[in-house]
Length: 237
Image 1 (tube, rainbow, N blue to C red):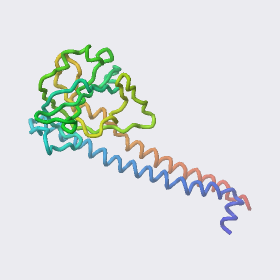
Image 2: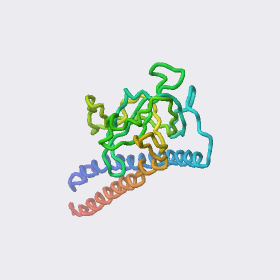
Image 3: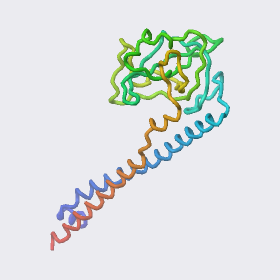
Image 4: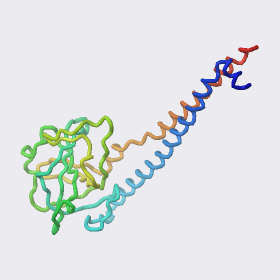
């Protein structure tokens, strides 16, 4: 029987393992191709948004019924509640620091459901505390321009937040989309927002390389099994 022949030639278990591994490797390659298509769509939308803003296109005023679709460019007016600031540990341009997240309450509205969280931008470590940047703690009405972003989910390696110091390592403390402020200067220079164009460098798009890796591993596995099977062809001769 064929199975007995494969067992005698030492091919049965290599054949089983190869048959199990190949679909997994090919499936991962196909999945990365699908992710590549999705990521290209995200980058195309981001590119179109930036082009529209740079050409003087209309910017949506954030309000009731406004779209919170990710990467929409918008502007919103309100008053910051600096007492609720949160600090997200990060680095920018090789410098360690924090992103300052502050809720903005819209005019004529009260309650947490009227607050929109704003990523006001980056500060170096020495400017984390509000007292180090008093000019940026504006108490009057503010207008923020920026891009809608979605909160991150904690990865398995994300450190636990330091709640005593109000330091976080992801935006998982948010339950709704937030606005990442553009590079419009804040009083005193901090926090410092960023140009939306810089998002192109912060959103990785390595799915083509990942797909190539998985398909290559599948090809190598198939070749290795073929070479091994060929080397065992005369075992029973």
